[in-house]
Length: 69
Image (cartoon, rainbow, N blue to C red; front, side):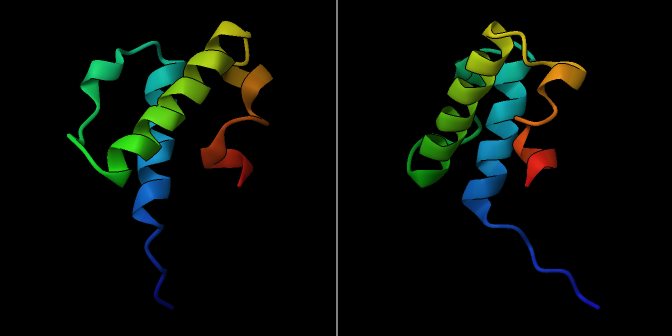
């Protein structure tokens, strides 16, 4: 059975979230413009917020979009 590819914006969001939780700079965004950049930056912001609130590792597993969805 073939699996469907995830939505491109969802993938950008998830990768941005990961970068934000890990404390990486938003300047590392792979997209230069468009909806991909918007989704990545949105995920990055959410990831940074989770990191600042201490929701990393096991304590933040319920917030991680890669696992929770």
